[in-house]
Length: 284
Image 1 (cartoon, rainbow, N blue to C red):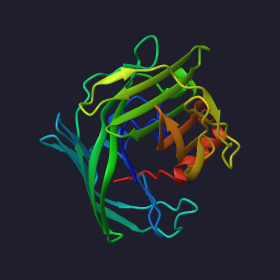
Image 2: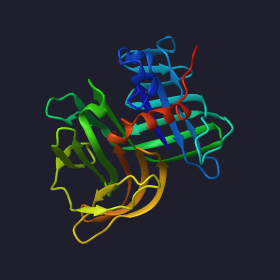
Image 3: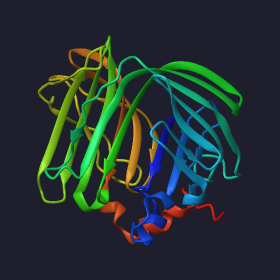
């Protein structure tokens, strides 16, 4: 399960077509649920009249994200979009997710030379408690929480990026590989201890991954002499993919969540025209 709260949705065609003048008028809570026979996707964009926020909380339509002490509580009541291979008939997606960070990281990392794009892994490792009403499921497990912020569109600064995160014993590893639009690149390899303190390490060698069904290239990194194996691709779109890998990092075998993003493809008018089907906009 992946949940992303957007204020000024970076992937929104409506926001792009508006000239990106009012981010608060283009907000969405994206929920991607991959369950046993009941995959669901919701990403309804809502105007500023349905958005409220302060330092501790964010409400977007019928859903909300708020801090409860050190826990982040996400409540949602959304209608799914018909996104193949998920069900083509809209369904409800309702429930509560509580994210309980094992530690809080306070350090943010600039992704470009000007500091216009910043990433902060708030909780590199967290316990999650999920209670869904629709579909009726519940579980607990391990999770991750981060935030990205920027003062310009992603596609104005970057061409491609590959990101992954993995849990290794008591620590967490995060890899970030970026190719910027100006031709420069950034490779981050971070290890977070059980207190959430980051430490850089030498980026491991590149290892290949198979392209997506849309023929989008993707790669990752793994320890010398090891490879990464694709376990399942959860999202496969013309410009973005999300997958699970079996890999080897910091001397240990581990499972990783991996994402690839092609901003060059996102700039395509053809791709922009496809996005309203994945992220409809509320008119109320």
